[in-house]
Image (cartoon, rainbow, N blue to C red; front, side, top):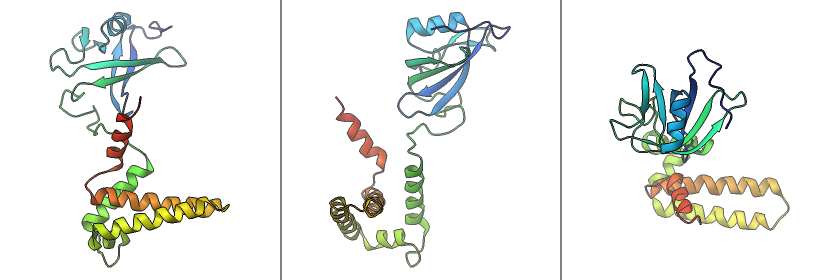
Length: 199
């Protein structure tokens, strides 16, 4: 890997640390050539600490090591993206990341929709909120709705109307997310099962 440590007068380049599974950015540190080489040799992320003025392996005191999965160099050869498997919290303050965010998988709009469903379940008026009304009716009604939507998807899959097929698919997914929460789960729990089956 051709890394240009000479671009900065101090010989340091930024290293962005990312969880290889969740893709969450955990922290930013700096490496010189010696820190990079130690990272390669030990498979544990090592920085050059500007405070300590020495090489510093993340976790050498706390035990919260960052185990290297992959290293990528950017287009200018002066910034690293290091994908890791963290052992415990990354930040010295005890949080998952140095931005005090939770290190969890984020599925974009689906994750946002899950949060909306949870908020409606906990706070919304069942007279005004469709989601709250389903939770009030209970697990049997929610499961029935998932079954109905699944049948609609099967029916539309046999037709040539793509718009209807996608619309029914969206309905099925929406009600399935509700059913998951009614059972105490979220989509990430299903993803974990799928990952466990990967060969």
